[in-house]
Amino acid sequence: MSFPAVRPRRLRRTETLRRMVSETRVARDDLALPLFVVEGRGIHEAVASMPGVFRFSVDALASEAKLVADLGIPAVLLFGIPAVKDARGSGADDPGGVVQRAVAAVKQAAPELCVITDVCLCEYTDHGHCGIVENGEVVNDASLERIAAAALSHARAGADVVAPSDMMDGRVGAIRRTLDTSGFEQVPILAYAAKYASAYYGPFRDAAESAPAFGDRRAYQMDPSNRREALREMRLDLAEGADLLMVKPALLCLDVLADARREFDVPIAAYQVSGEYAMIHAAAERGWIDGPRAMDEALLSIKRAGADLILTYAAKDVAARMRG
Ligand code: PBG
Ligand code: ZN
Image 1 (cartoon, rainbow, N blue to C red):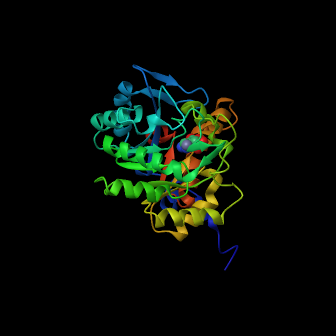
Image 2 (image 1 turned 120 degrees about the horizontal axis):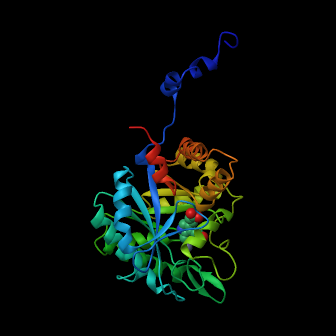
Image 3 (image 1 turned 180 degrees about the horizontal axis):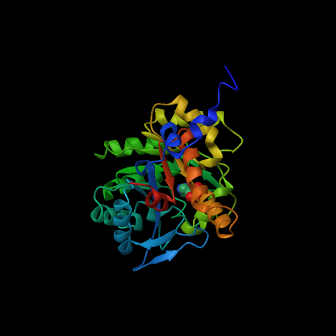
């Protein structure tokens, strides 16, 4: 049967009908909000390239955490920006470091909020790379020890989930072993499993002061031309003990998200990265698109492609707009 007997428009005629047959919905429970934490006191400073995004000092984080929890958002993803950086990223596993204190502050202010920590060295290294540099190259195995130490210090500080974003080979296994031998076998790993070397991380690097001082990240992050390789990365991270898999940048990777959903049974997360967020805001500021609608549509598409969880800087705006 086809036209004129079949008319798909019949089910699009009214708002109620559309609601009834809607296949995908983004819920508050699907969202997690990334937060940047800096040293200092009373700091709540805007990130120029990301309207609506701020950098908080640890003392200013409590009220933000309560706001997030009151909006019904279940999780935050913390990024620490230390005052001092060095070659080995010493701040990354400092028990008194900025992110470690931030974890404690958020847990105290909003105990039910799930605190995920980004585990990487780039915010803490003076060269801005995600691992240890030797002879101008990011060396893999020497980086693992530092990354695992950072993850352990986050768990000790009270992190509910650790999320390695460095893309070194074997980091998930190294973190899992370190956590398990230190009494943190219950702390899940959210692996940035398919993370592409993307131009869309630009605004983030301003916010986190983590741009590489030389070269770029293409020797460890994935080539955007590769789709099959994403499955390989995800399979490896699962074998090493990842509990959740992340794909990023989200809207640029809808094919990879769909692959991941079809191939694996674990929850799939997608990161709508800084550049995706900034583009929507920039166009909306110029009056070129309807910002809230463009944002909702982007998140809906990410969910439709297969994401269970969406990390987005728009989490508060989106949650505040939701009905009921
Ligand atoms: C750190 C990290 C980055 C992002 C998340 N963790 C930046 C990078 O890899 O250069 C990007 C997030 C964003 O752009 O919003 N490794
Ligand atoms: Zn990094």
